Length: 293
Image (cartoon, rainbow, N blue to C red; front, side, top):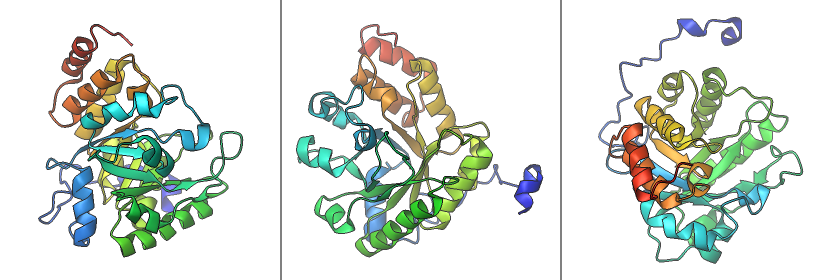
C-alpha cells in the first residue's frame, strides 16, 4: 500500500509520451474484436474524440429540470451530438428510430435519490442492448462506497456479457458526497474500471487531470457535472481534451441552457474543431441571439 504513504510525487506518468494505439485510432482498442471496434468508431470520430449528450438523469431523479419533455427538449438536439446517453425506456419511447447517433444505454440502476444511490444492480440484459442496436452500455461504479464490491460486480458482469455480444462497456465513476474529486481518487477509480475490462471510462475533470488520463489505458470521457457559466464549461472541456480526454459527455451544461442547440454546437467547436473557449463562447452568444447564461 505504498500509495497511501505519500509516494505519489515519485510516479512517472510519461506525460510527454502518449500511449501508442497500434494502427487503430481509439486508445486501447487495437486488440478488440471487429464488432467492438466498429461500435467504438461510431462513438468516436476520426479524430478519436466524441461529444456525447447525457440525459439519463431521470433513472434516479425523475423529471430533471430541462428533461421534463425529452421529446421536445432533447430529441431535436441529436443531429449535433456524436452519441446519446440515455435509458432504454426513453430511447424506445421518444427518440426517433431514424436517429443515427451512437446510443450509449444506461444498464445499471435501482435506488432513487430517496435512497442510497450506490446500491445499484444491473438493470438491463445485454440481449436487449443487442435488440436496441446499442453502441455501448453504461454502468455506474462506486469506488470507496459501502456498495463498492457490488458495483464492481455489476461492471464485470456487463463486461463479460458485452464481450460476448461485441458491445463496449462505459464505466462511470460515481463520486458521493464524501469523495474528493482529485487526481488521486479519480486516478484510482478510472484505473480500476479499466483494469476490470471496461472499454471506455467517464469521469470528472480535476487538477492534474493529465495524470488521470495518462494512467488509464482506455479512453476517458469527461463528465460535465453541474451547470456552470458558459465560458467556464467550455474552458473545462478545452482543458480536458488538451490533457488527454477523448471527449466530453455533457448534460446539464447543455440542456439547462437558454439555447441548448447553441451550446451543443459551441461544445463541438471546442472538442472537434480546436476552437478556444472564448471563440466558442462568442459562437454560443451569436447562435442564441445574446444569451448570457
